[in-house]
Structure formats: C-alpha cells, structure tokens
Length: 590
Image: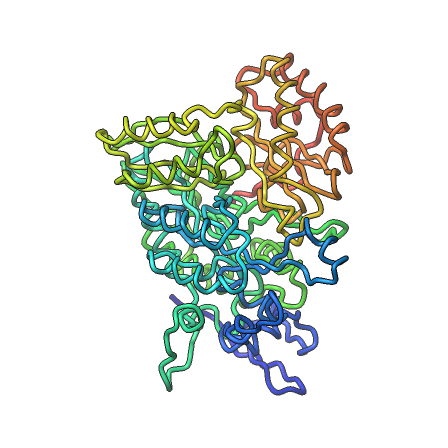
C-alpha cells in the first residue's frame, strides 16, 4: 500500500513534540493548541504513564489524573457511584471510585468456557451482573482498584482481552450475528476478527502492566499505524450482511457492507463518516450517518481500512476533541476530497457501490435452524443486563447452559444474546434449562420492548444527565398500555434511550428516541427508519414522563388507524409530517 505522509514538528518550551503526518487539516499547530489528551499521550511512553504507581497508591480508590485517561486504552473507565455521591460528601469521604472493564470479543463471539469465566469474574470482583454492550462487548461494573489487575489477568487467561476496547484507537469490530440466515456469515465473522486483530495497538505496555511481562531491553515500542500519538479520537468499524443491519453499519466511522455474488463474498461496499455523538448547545457537533463511497474486493478491504484510519490520523482535529471524529474531518474538507485522498494513497480507485437492501436493524427471537443444520436461540436481554431477578433467573440459566453447551455465545448489536451452534442432541436440554429458570418466555416480550435499547447512564456513567437503563423498562410498561389499546402490542417500533447525547445506545436511530437532559427530563426524537439508514428528528424538548405519554398517545393512535400496509412507525411520522426527515440523508457516490 502506498502511503503519503510527512513529518511535522511542533516545538514547545518543554522540548520537541513530533507527529508523523498532518495536524488538523494539514495545518501546523502550536504546542499550546493541542488538547490535553494529546499532551498526555505524548508523554505516556506508549500508554504506560504512571498506571503501575496509580494502582499501588493506597491513599485513594482513584488513579492519578493522567492515568484516568490512559487506562481507557487498556479497556477500563474510572467511575464512581453517583447514587452515593451526596451521602459520601456529607461524611467527608471521597467518591466511591470503581472501574468499568470492557472485554473485547470481535463480532461478539465467545465460547462456553469463556462465558463461565466472565460470569465468575462478575461475581468475584464486579457487581454481580454482566452488561452486554451495543458494540458486542462485555462490561463489568463496580470493580474496585485493588481488583482491577486480577480481573484483567483472568480475562486474558481465557484468551480474551480488554486492550483497545476504549481510547483513541480502533474499538471492538462489530459483525452481524446471523449465522442461521447465511452460509457466508462465518467468513464475514472471521474477517471481522482479522480486522480486529490487525488494528490492535502494538505497544507492549498492556502486557507489562497487567500480565507482568518484562519489556525486552533495547527494543523500543513502535506503532506502525497509530504512531506516537494514536488517533485524534476513537474509531469504530462494523461489518453488515444484508438484509439485516442489526449492527447499524451507518453509525460507524467505517462501515463494510458484505456483497454476495454467486454464493460467495465478492467484496464490500465502503461506508465512511458515521458517528452519532453530539454536545448540547454546540451546533458544530451532530449525529451523522456514513456515506457509501464505493466497492472494494475482499482481498483489498484491509488496505482500504488502514488507509482510512491513516487519513484520520493525519487530518483529524487534535485541538478540540468534540470535533475530532472522522465525520468532522470529512465534513470540514469535503467528501470528494476524502475519496480523492483515499484513492491517491491506495494507488487505485474504488469501484461503484454494489446494490444491496436492508430490511431491519432488529433481532429475530427464539429458535431458528441454521444453514449448517445446527440450532440458534436468540434471547431477549433487556438493555443487555444479565442478572437474576425474582422468577426470571437469566444469569443462572446461562451459567447452567454454558456447562453443557458445545457451541458458542454470540452478542448482538441490540444488547441481546444468541446461544449459537447448538447440536440437535443438546437442544432439548437447553430448552429445559430456559424453561426451568423462567427465561424461555419473557413475561413482557411485546414488540415495543423487544425493539428497545438503553445505555447504562446513571448510576455509574459520569456523563449522564438522566436515567436510561434503569428507567426505560418502566416507561415501556406505560407505553405498552397505549400500544395494546390500539392493537399494536406485537408491532416492532425501535425505541432507544440514552442518558446524554453521546448516543451509546444509538438513540438517533430510534423510530422513537430519547436523550436525557436532566433527571426526569428528555428530548424526544421521531422518524428514524426501521432499517437504520435515516436519522430521527427532534420533536419536543425537556419532556417529563407525563409529557411523553401525552405526546405519543395520539401519534400511536393515528399510526394504528392511518398507516399504510407494511408501513413502519418512523416512515409514518415522516409521511404525516409530524416531523420533517433529517436534513442530511446518506450519500451514495456513483
């Protein structure tokens, strides 16, 4: 692959800070113009910082400030229990610091042995639950600093990792979990895993800090792609297999749409510039769906991905992190510029995009027989929280299944779980376990609930303005009454809620979307498509629960009475001009 880069030096009183590549649209920046995170990365010695000393410090449950940033690259966020904040302040205690640990699993696939290990860790060091994320990862919550290293070590012992699940690098690579639908799924999954491994940071800091490996003397670290300062911001890749878009491919910096020809993968349509995060009051930030810029044969796709990442490394904004995602780089310089730069670096041109069609971005539940004659059970996991609750003993059921299961577990992009590749001889036993622990038939599995998604939000996320995971189920209880009264209890309407506009649960792609503004108050958005290719539009701001129900009841009633045959809710509210369609649709280059 042909790469065009140049060395730019940024001089400062403290010495000389060097970046390989261009700094923010090719302009040279003064040292003082760089964001704080850039300075932290510069002096981190390839992500080491003082994390080892932070972990040993007995005077606080927190890490040193710079290490709070650096530990993200190692797969953890420092958090605190916000429910106890006021009480601990009154007692003159520091916040109850704790850590979230995120486990990397490309395409969301794990073995039964790995599942059992993660289950045990959640009990031993976490808060007793597992969180299935919207990026097909696992999260532990409530881990104390003294237990952070043992947790990460045990994750690695079962051949999983937490490396690069957070930070300014490529994150966990997503892949459609639909092996029962297509024989090509395994090939796409293996490709997702290859991409995931290929773009891992090469620093040995992770293995030194967490796995007690010694650095080899005289062999300095080197990052051939990320260089000394990594990316300006996080980078996300996802692979979708039409007709299902369960991983919301257009919400990613780089989306790859698998194109099947003659029962084989011919290659992938390339989509760039997706990202849903924004900031209230800052019009320069916004949700954006990726544009489809061309097609590449499968043997050239990693070169394309590497070059896209390199362009973002060289031109992404390193002074303002709110404007540092690839979407801003593309919009600042223009899509045509980006494609020309990409093709110039590659030394060849992308072909025209191939035709494809997405029908849904949801999951299909229950038992399905795969093309390989094995069984798959797709299980609804409300907002991805795996725990035992009264007569619904989900965590115990999955533990018992993992003890006898010989297939795999597959996380979906909608926070659900597929018990995959079940042998015919094991199906009856697994079915019996699901029934025994009350999991076989979820007591509230209406169309609205099984199409819902929420981020963690309070009490652990420091960015949340309002509840999401802990509140959305009760809001759906009330909305289901309206749905049932209008004969819509089986209709699937994508409903998503986030506690802030960072959009971890992709609320901008909800046919009904909620974004928290304050405790008990939400902005409500309407009109996303049912297949993930159109954003929703702001409808009303600062709504209470009472306001939400008052606003949605007549709209839902009108939908029941006036919808066209097969018309989805998001399309209905656009057709009826309840909201206008998003101003910026996906662009497909010809």
